[in-house]
Image (cartoon, rainbow over all chains, first blue to last red; front, side, top):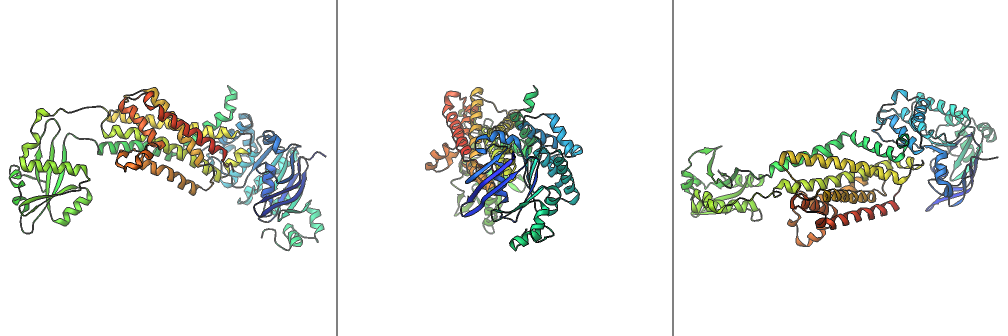
Length: 243
Length: 371
């Protein structure tokens, strides 16, 4: 099997904190994976290493068979990311913002228009970014992440703080992407329903280690018939998932 | 042609220029405020053909002090009061008239007028003698004392005497506004670069936008080059607008070499661009960034000879002040504007400013935190 993401024996520490402990993880092409865990579980550090922002102290991370140390420029073309609460340049319009990021991938106006249609921001094309609602900003962020038709999409809490309608808009967008089967997704989220709705697999982390990695159904069955992910986490650790 | 529009450096420069032009505060602080400052200070400190000066005369208890003073004879020739004060006009065709207003008041009132800056000289008759009180460190007060003393001892004709000995000099570049405008241009470069480059980078780091951008194939150097280029273009516009205003309203001229001015202008921009990158290399806290930038710009704004000559500072500080980047830039621009300087006269400033910019940029880039 050619994995799109391979994480093998990865360790990462910051001063006295062992943030990621011997993590192994593999993601198939087109697979959607949710990364769940309480604050301080090591999710952000793991995702930053997959993004190439941090290098592991030990172990190996490969994206499409390539490593960050050697193939940095190439890998930047293969991934798309959307960080929580990223703020773009406030006085550029939606069109100009997407056009700016498109230039980083040497893409032209045609792709910009496609993205605007994909994220349903046609009416806001000429609006300044600082005049967009929260949901519209998130759609913009996801749209920019999809500019280069990434093999791997990394979304950090894409619907946190959004109203239900805006959340559903993002979910629809991601579901459509899933149906195309061309992009793998690593999603960090606090919303269990989001993980359940969108993802093929759930990975639960705590204190730097992966506690569980399977489909939702199998996880719930395995851990004493938990009804949801929070109950599952309580069964595993004795604590709530979002303590 | 199509490819240039997709080019990331081109797009980054355009994006930054649009951001600047769409920010109303930038247009005010960058263009409007320097013009207002130049106009206000230029008018306030311009030498006028006719001047008015107020002098406080302290009343003795129960007496009309002006009647008892030596001035009374003089004032007697001009019995009309103006605005309630005794008025003495001193005429001089060649150097302009001075209108003296003697304001009778109590000691308390005189001190209040002194503190407000309304008067700089207080006269009191003590034991039949005129006693003059003023701040000896205040050059204008000193001159006023000499003038009034001269009038007291020699009569009002003293001021208009010896006209044939006076030959007014009208040397271009000696007015306060001629001193001020080059300083404002230099200060504009510093402020625009510091806030426009440093603060922007810190702000973007705090908003994770830098991190978002470096997760793409964007070349990191392109981002910095674009930011510096956009700021440079704005600095050119701001300097040109300020100069044209000063040229139209105050008749400012550039006496020296324009190519030297352009090269020095570029060197100044390089210096402050590099310093700005270094200053913004680490923190992602806009409040700390604010503090760092203010810590750099405020002292230089005060001591670098922008609004007044730095020769007023203690002698031991002069070598330090003279070598500050803003001082070098202001002095260089001033020498081109007012002294007719060319490249040979300001090569040192050009070299030091450029080197400062390059070194600080390289160091800044090495330690730069992109996220």
